Amino acid sequence: MTPDSVVRLDSNGSTLSDVKPTKEAIMHLQILNARPDLNVVCHVHGVSIVAASAMLEPGESSLPPVCPGFVYYAYPLPMLEFMVPGSAALAASAAETMLSRGRLAVLLQNHGLIAAGPDWQTAVNVAEEVDEAASVFVLSQGKAKGIDDDKIRAIRGPWVRRRGYE
Amino acid sequence: MVLNAPVARPSRSRGIHRATPLPPLLISLTPYMVDAAGDLAYDLRGSGARKGTSKMRERYEMTPDTFCEVCRLLYDRHLVTGVGGNLCVRVGEEFMVTPSGWS
Image (cartoon, rainbow over the protein chains, first blue to last red):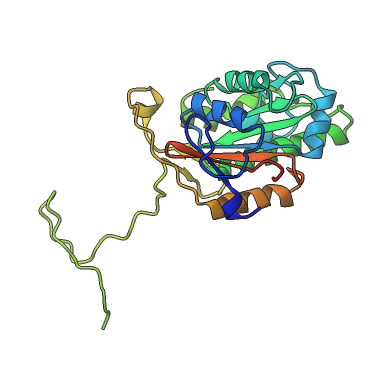
């Protein structure tokens, strides 16, 4: 991939260059349109992330709070049930889930992870923290014990104070 | 002798003449910055934007070169495969996105 092959889209999703965009561009655009505070969305398919998503049940919180970095950035991490990649249904569900204030990540069952941020450093960091937690979860065959609730509150305290919300 | 040295101008707002120009602010043009630990971005816009009183959103900048570097970073860290996984960035009213078949 070269700088020339990066696809440019206008705000409606119409292509401004000759190259065809990824089929999941619609999902990215809907998320960014729903959340003006975010500028970067990365969608990753790390092996541990996909493995963990295949072991867990969809819902408001999926991956247990197994490491502090994950707790700080992305806990509780919701997971959407499997939907066809690139479909309008997936794009709409992902954007709706990301509407929650302060949320930076959503897990997609048997598919991967959406990680977002105001800048690329944050988005990539969130993806790496979730990847680490997913690796711990998979390596422990799902038996990893989570961090206690009172310690979760202590870890997320600086986040809440800086951003003013949970 | 220093050529092209910055010209010291008197500050009009406070009426104090500064002999030396102030150093440039080490803050990026985006409303967010990474803290000293290098891993935490936070909002510099203050409570006004958070409460929704200001509709102004500051423009985030990224060049296609940086876009490719981030894609490469994700690939090198085994977070994306050859064609799976993708990146999307908002720059003003436009978006940059990964082409189909690439990551």
